[in-house]
Amino acid sequence: MELILFYILAAILVVFSILTVTAHSPVRSAVYLISALLVMAGLFFLLEAEFLGAVQVLVYVGGIMVLFLFVIMLVNVREVENQPRANRQWRTAVVLGVVLSCELLFFVVQGASIFSTEGLESHLIVDGQTLNTESVGNLLFSKYLLPFEIASVLLLVAMVGAVVLTVKER
Amino acid sequence: MVETGHYLVLSSIVFTIGVIGVLTRRNVIIILMSIELMLNSVNLNLIAFSDHLQDVSGQVFAVFVITVAAAEAAVGLGIIIALFSNKETVNVDEIDLMKG
Image (cartoon, rainbow over all chains, first blue to last red; front, side, top):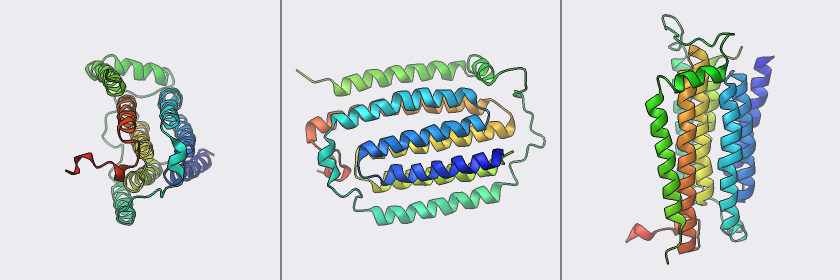
């Protein structure tokens, strides 16, 4: 049952990803990407990562993609539509992409036996008692507190940078 | 129960699609969206391993990846807006200010 659900979601995800990079208009591309991200959130739920599934929907679909759509509307879309969508190096790029995918698949297949759980101490087992959000929060505010603070500073810097970049000089 | 290898194969497929999108498209906005796709496939990898090893650390790292993706999108889109107001284009092969 879970496997069937996984295959359905995986097929939809791959189709939407391909549509994202091949769509002519940026608006359609953004809508396909939103669909792909929602399917990805479904996969997160399938992996019992409820917190990240919710964050994916809230931050990616609700925040980042809306920002993308705003910018697409700001720059002129009409002008973009009638031009070739690929640049001059697309043949080389496709060949490189196929080589990369062969490489990745080779290593995944080769390395499948390495990923065994034997002898690994799993120090934070997601048991029935603690919820996923609770355990993520516990870890985020104890072991990963410094990276968490650095991430908040990074967001502040990005915000200031975006404002500085877009503000008009008088 | 889905094996971890399935997730790895799926995430490598999505990552490759993102790479091809970055390398072939002319529109900067679509290139940025392909980068988001690649970052998301990495997230899928992290969470699949977090499930495989029964360790929540992978999910914490995915949270950081989402943070960095948000920051990157904000700065990238700011650059695109500044670029469009200067050059009136969003195509990468027409932006050659540093060619000399």
